[in-house]
Image (cartoon, rainbow over all chains, first blue to last red; front, side, top):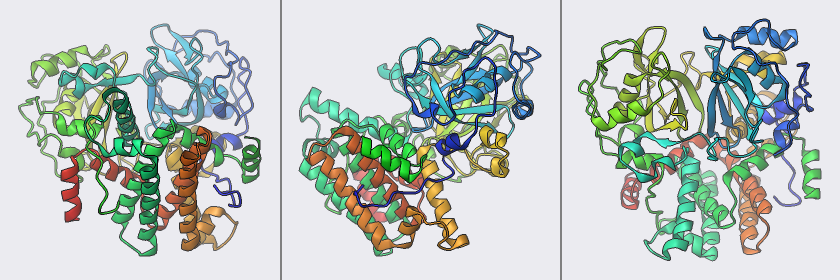
Length: 300
Length: 300
């Protein structure tokens, strides 16, 4: 952004903004609760352990004292016969589903308060905070319940790979790959469109190293020619702009934006920058006031 | 993209590509299986009903005859004591978690074969294909199992709103909103960073209508001034390019890409185009050969 450009004002609706605004009301006695609004943005930070008495999923009374508003919210969840609800951890920046476990009342209370994704382990019959052993915590920015109030999303940023295997997420086995007898069926991470495209660009980059020029591809050509890549990005930006200035139809705008995004992602690949990092920048920028953001830029 | 620009070659790793490559092996007798690779891209298409005999989750033998490879895959899933596994439907383009249900053996077999997200309803003790009543099917592009093989992701495109309430996804109740006593706590869809930003831009656009100039904001200024917006997009594209040509550091590239993405998204908002549409364009472009893609462009 140009030094003279005014900064976008802090919006009020992003999850990260909610994090900033939300006053820590819960008072889980055992947890040393870090200040609200800071946890989500820190990475690989030591976590003050929550010393929760292991309890069965259905245990009453709850092992933790929580405030009445949190109690009321916990009461509103439709826990199943075993006192559990499905809890899904999702990466707030990429949208990747990181893992799925179950939460009981105490696990959700702990997550609300500590903002570290916490589950109920059915095999060990105890609470567990994801990362308590690996230090790869999932820092929770927001929590959502579904329409039936029996399914929970923990929306957060992972400190590192979520899966115990070291994989980024626990979902890396494609059913269709397996049925096709693909040898790489154990290795392909679940990926939505943007990240499939990022993976593809990344593979072309690897192929340049492993196979030389090999099979021709437009992506490889761009990866090998900075001048061409830059002129294409300029051209695509110009064509996107043109759809506005010349009042071209919506589908043209979507198409030109797709072109611009793809070419800009090739540049990211050349620079070894992940879309996740770009989205982190945007999240942080839109979760603080322009003043704070300007200040933090000057420092960096 | 310029008319003269070479087209990116079809990659082999995107979910949509897998859809194209995967030969329909399953032979669910009752289902009229549409050709593989076409379903995922069609919208609001009538669905040939799968006439599955209602069966309890644990029923054996399965009501459907599937081929040995599918049988082996179904055997590899760790079904719980009730014969179920958690099944999460996720939007392949946006990454939004649409809904969560449970699948039994038959539900997963039906989903593999028909490519319509199918679940086991615990309340009705029967299979149900999402959309069989509302016609808002979820067209499945890929299916993933987690490391424990007891949790499933159906990655697909929804034909319309997924929730029975008419909401886009079933997750629109933020726990922190509720604890803050926010009146809008029933109305905020779960959103990852890119879509939070899109929502924010969209809110600024609404504010211009409802409040006039009101509280000043950079986004509003851009929304109201096409020339300014276009010159900013050009400028940000130039600054992104500069990070490559002048070998600036990675963090600078991430920051400039964030700026470009934000400004381009304001243009999308002016043109009433959603990021989801842009990603759909990219998915389709990268799931077919350059030749097919070129042909389809000429038609449109």
